[in-house]
Image (cartoon, helix red, strand yellow):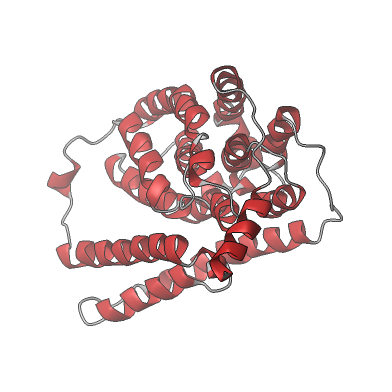
Length: 312
């Protein structure tokens, strides 16, 4: 049961978003585990969402950045090799640990009254968010990062649903704390005096995975794209999954710890989620063995040529 939920989070994040997938996984876990979710399993939910999003250009901000910059979605998809291996390396032990901590409630529906109107509203919000995310990135990738399309789409969905159910505005103050913290992380990372990464190689890509757990992966990805010469499948996996090692290393970790404040402890996260860095190392080298490092052609040149041909 616990492993199946992690697999579902993994799949959801590949076409939705790693943040949304982690929140959905955390909400479901609260229900089926009767509110008792082990920190090691929380780390597993975050890791599953980040792993699933690393192989999809719509599953993570960093992979979307690569796509907008001209990297082929097929190249990014290569990250799924390492991500799939990592999922089972950390997922099986995390599920076993959670089952011992609080067995899954197989018949939780018998004790839960479902408000189908709210379920429909959630479905509407998800549908509009997915449609907007996919449509904008497929048809308007050049402007995808210049306007908060998904945020506006979600607000439109909320406005459409107000007549059916009143939104729970009381949760906003607590959610705002996580949002401010995340924005502060991104701001601090952008102010760091780092203008260049080490020369592109599998060694440097491997190291960036550990760096992304403490240094926001968005500016790291921007620097890598500016520098060029990386195997983008490896980089997508490194900066995407690497942030799972610490709770504030990824947006999904910050979002999930809004639901579970007990997860905001670096020591407890590392203590109970120590299999995540091990999964990262093992899966990275398995991918390197079956799919050797092959730097992509200069994607900016292809993008420029495509733009030139479109104008003629």
